[in-house]
Amino acid sequence: ETGVTQSPTHLIKTRGQQVTLRCSSQSGHNTVSWYQQALGQGPQFIFQYYREEENGRGNFPPRFSGLQFPNYSSELNVNALELDDSALYLCASSLAAAGVGPGANVLTFGAGSRLTVL
Amino acid sequence: QKEVEQDPGPLSVPEGAIVSLNCTYSNSAFQYFMWYRQYSRKGPELLMYTYSSGNKEDGRFTAQVDKSSKYISLFIRDSQPSDSATYLCAMSAPGGYQKVTFGIGTKLQVIP
Image 1 (cartoon, chains in turn green, red):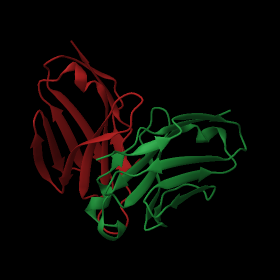
Image 2 (cartoon, one colour):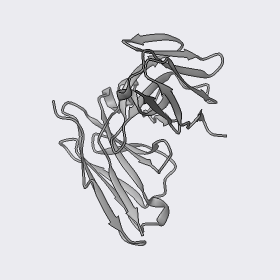
Image 3 (cartoon, one colour):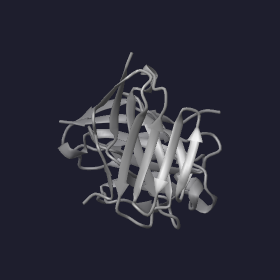
């Protein structure tokens, strides 16, 4: 059973640029969530994907967008990067019927992608 | 006011001590309560998962939920240096998509 893998592990961008982060779900999982963890903070929910559609979103602006693919892998895209976007971006997969219900909150996290915006 | 409050520590204890970690919350809709452990430069890993009020034990770890007080706890018995990590409480409400709300995390150091 493979876990959640994320790439790249580290990257540095400048303000105004765009970034794409990638995630492969744990085998057998059908739901993907993305979280932002700023230094010294807990993870903050960005959005969740089920069946290739966003089915829940936290308090993040539209320049944060995502995709889920038929194999349940996912991408997080952030446009017009700001200094405050510097953080660890965590992908988490879970298994839930219809993308809702208690199974969807039993999260398996990847190691994260650390983004630095200069 | 944050939905979930957690003391960030750091908390330093000698090996073998009993560790008590706590969180309070304000959203009465929360029904699912979790504790995650996060080592440096790693993603969080699920330690304990409980539904509604009550206690749950798994080896050296015990999770307690008191919904009447909106207070959850994690106890670690016979703490080991390998327990040194950041412990995140997390919770979610039933229905719809499952947004998980995390505390800030408590950094624990167990000294040999």
